[in-house]
Picture 1 (cartoon, one colour):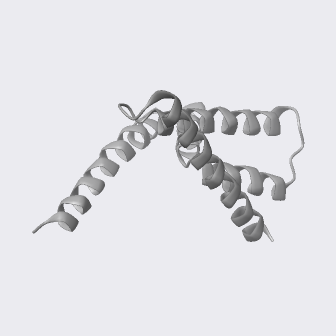
Picture 2 (cartoon, one colour):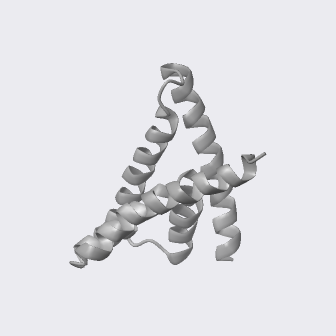
Length: 123
């Protein structure tokens, strides 16, 4: 059942990401990737709001958590999961792991993308 909820939520999140990115690009142009920037920040804001409320104020069923966090927000942006995992590490006092996660994913992602792009476009 959770897989179906995540799949439906992921579809909703992906459509929302596309709509918001498109709206931001129409409003601001394409000089800077503002659409992705706004989506990532909004995703972090929403992920933090849901997890904070679920932890402190509202009882959230596991199915609702799967639908909202893994599904909707996972489809919207995985950047919010990346930030949540980093914040959890910081809150647990795992500063080195948090730093490695934050810097490591950015650097490794850039290297992986650039390498794959170079291989794919090699003539």
